[in-house]
Image (tube, rainbow, N blue to C red):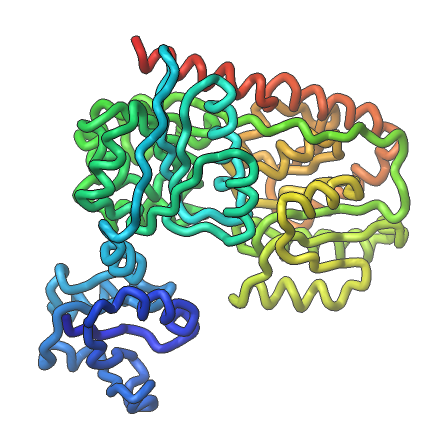
Length: 469
């Protein structure tokens, strides 16, 4: 197969080894770039302008950029056949079809099920963490559980396996081939995690019972829905969802899905997390540590939070008693660069980077206030962990967790993630220090009532009982 690669930048450099691993005798005949006149040749291959493509003979053009949708639109405008245009992930994962040995599931005890959970790329993010908790909850109910993903962070894979979960690396997900489908059909129930796996949920619905667990935000804050509805448009219809039991991780997540697919019944299935709380403190220490946790992005609002901190400092409300931790991948985009620039000017801000689960457990022992400054969260794992640890929690109203919170009683809630609003909330928290022990105890009670593993098992048991009816 004669391949053209559209893109010569950082995305290509990060992923070219993955591409090389699945070439299988394919020939890369050249690159495509809108700066072709400047580049000329790249890695000993010619670089073509997109408008010259109709003159070339090739079998497939692979989009090697985070701006793949813009690239795809450009190629379609040049009358490049749609069937020749492939996303990088699509090309690589299709190449993996049938290449990996997939183990048969163990037999389940009488009255129990063999459950396969299929999720997306697994890293140290909330969606990944909660799906492992779902696996543990189902195992505790006596079901035989396998968790499968196309990609997983190496250290996380070790942690997952050591926790007792039967994990299978299946690089073809979500582009299932004949071998992958035959493997899935051996299970009694398929739990599909996240909207990105729409292709898996819809293509398997007639082969075995499917539960689809939705976590994705509104279009105004993320591009998950528009991107994957376009990518898998053959499944983008309510008729393709007949028979699938769909649940949002919160009422907010369910409502957003219903907005995209009116008429589809969507339930609510909040997750639970293991109890790792080690008791609440009776008084705040100094410095008071505020932590905002998650990969740096516009959605997570780290820049807005740091600007709020600056406002507190200028108003004399900070009193040099606080320290700010930014925990998560910083990245190399303009937003991340701006966050780094602000952080480096503030001596009390620490960039902690990505922490393993064990490192996070230790970090929580030192953290006083957990902050979620996101534009929108379906059910913030960070907030739930904060409640579980009995921390002071600050979030915006646009978060599914607020359905069970009471502002000023068990958490602090501000209208949005704009700096002025966040700054006012920070000032309120600092002034309320004599009430912190009371607020922490109530936060812990919210966790026990709503997000414990016991509650999660009860919810999952109810869902599976209805599946058996």
